[in-house]
Length: 150
View 1 (cartoon, rainbow, N blue to C red):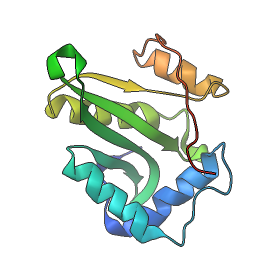
View 2: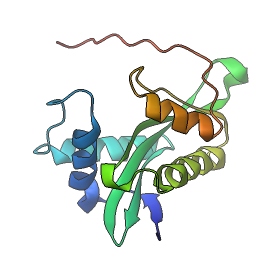
View 3: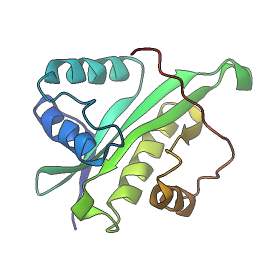
View 4: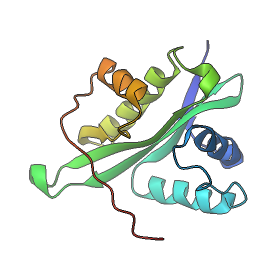
């Protein structure tokens, strides 16, 4: 399969939101009618040195992730990359798409001077955990989240 990996374009936002909606563990949270707000998030992510990355096959978005770049106070104020919202269309999994996407995201973080890349994965996503470990990620921490909005 031939893949194109790059930053998302405005006309691909709806396809990326559809990917999230297909794979989310929080149904009903995404709103495909509010594409301008998703695009605003892309612009803000880019302004801070990251990007929303898509993988395309034959011009169709089949995977995506967001790379957030931020500065740590620790590690002498070093830059860190966070990979978020990794989604691969269900019919495209186990074909190397996720590995290509994560490798691309790591390269982006490296280009931005990040000393580390990190990610979190929901406890129930056991297949995803195996995938991340097979791509060199160590399961070295426990993540916690607290909703701030009702």
